Amino acid sequence: MRISRAAAKLDEGLKAWRERPLGEVPYLFLDARYEKVRLEGKIVDCAVLIAVGIEAAGKRRVLGCEVTTSEAEINWRRFLEGLLARGLKGVRLIIADDHAGLKAARRAVLPSVPWQRCQFHLQQNAGAFVTRQEAKKTVAEKMRSIFNAPDRMEAERLLKTTLETWRKEHPKLAEWAESSPKFAVNLPRSGE
Image (cartoon, rainbow, N blue to C red; front, side, top):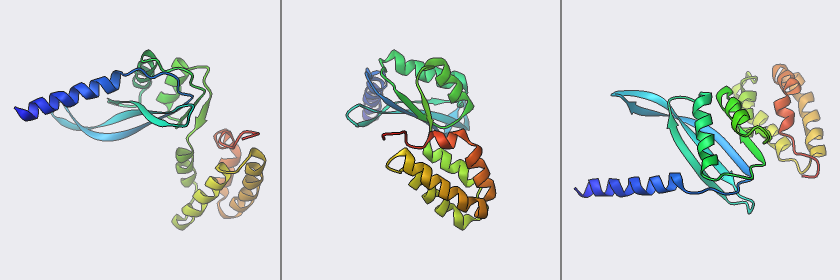
């Protein structure tokens, strides 16, 4: 009996958290992770859609999460529409991976909000072009130094010298980085 009451209280708290009003959040991070879930008597992989916001004052908070069967556009769209229905506004930048379902949903629900490729996912993609395992750490460090440059001019200088090295050591990585508009989008903007 006590367990049932405790579970009911937890459900009430979770419901209140999931339905709370949101307000203005300039920066919106979107991602999903997969977890094993029992569904209709079977254990299946389900996507847990997650939205994290950074408020104007710099405070980070989880805005919402939802378990769905996949990252299909319909699921991301419903999730984003739910955030807007709870009062999410003032989004100036979305940071997310390049998943097709998420991309289509954000274009449909928040079409005027600029998007930036998540640096973590970008680094994961870059790792696929590095053939030697021991070199992956060095490549990741170089990418972080470019992303963390104090301004765009320094980032472009670091990128240029890094590309020279990569052309010799990791030609496929260099080719990918040079042809990828997603890489350049992640450089710091002028004045930042």
